[in-house]
Amino acid sequence: MDKKTAISYGINFALIVLLFALLQFLNSIGIIDSYFQRILLVVGVNIILAVSLNLTVGFLGQLALGHAGFMAVGAYAAAIFTKSVKMDSNLELIISIIIAALFAGIVGIIIGVPALRIKGDYLAIITLGFGEIIRVIINNLSITGGSRGLSGIEAHAKFPHVYWVTVLCVVIVVLLIRSRHGRAIISIREDEIAAEMAGIPITYYKILGFATSAALTGVAGSLYAHINRVLNAEKFNFEYSIDILVIVVLGGMGSVTGSIIAAIVLTILPESLKFLDEYRMLIYSIALILMMIFRPSGLFGKYEFSLSKLIFKDKSKKAKPEELEDKEAAR
Image 1: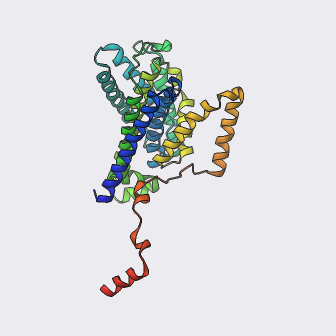
Image 2 (image 1 turned 180 degrees about the vertical axis):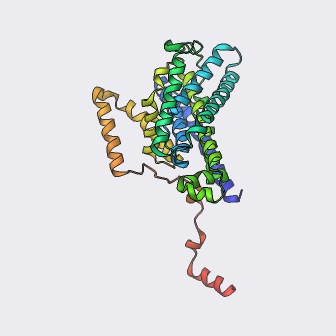
Image 3 (image 1 turned 90 degrees about the vertical axis):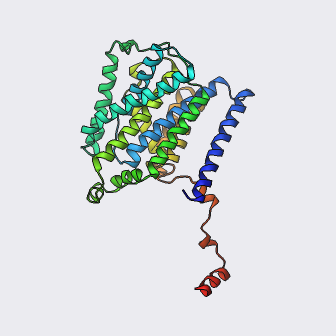
């Protein structure tokens, strides 16, 4: 890691800590009430969902429509664990998140092995079918409460937990994308045939991206269970998968920054329009349509916000003429 990258990471971390401290302070003096705090919790869950799906749709280039199913697996796995044991709430939450990620990741591998051999619209249909199968299975198991669902789940997920888990999930995706594995994943999106001819194991990286995406979606499901305290399989239907996809498309497929901003906007906007009653969804829909007309690539496209680009300028572009002459003379 070079000096510029280290400084950039340090500034990013400092800003994350400052934002957390600011939100905590606003909460302590009553500016952020319980209602708005709950919205912030939902924002965190939606950010994880959007970033994780973007890993599959935006970076891997595979259209998947079954992420609500992975979220359901994570939510129910976490809920069943917390209802079965009694221990320190923080430890219980951490273990439930790990269990949710493992279960959702394993299901992602099981589904990904056969599904990722198919491309395009067929993959979307297959993942949609698997998502519905997961929902139907959950609806018919006694351990999940069947169609009645689960209730009485401990509300372990407070704002600090959701905030830092969200940060961790985003960091995992960013580090993966910036690694050699991430470059391999992006190369598959750009040209799968060329990537295979270059010696990249296509199947391995497809499953890696898909399983990582599923595991992170399971983490979001775990937080959702601990926030809402009630689970019903009907919540995790096809429409919910589409809602997640809308966030990704609006933010920009292939942009983590876009997913974060879009998740914030699409979570807060419907709530801020509640005073319009039945007209709020109409205005919300019109806003999305206009967005897609004027920005079809999303808010950010594939652009990522980078502090290093703002802080460190290209010195060669800013060099004065006399400095360039000195360099030429030195040669």
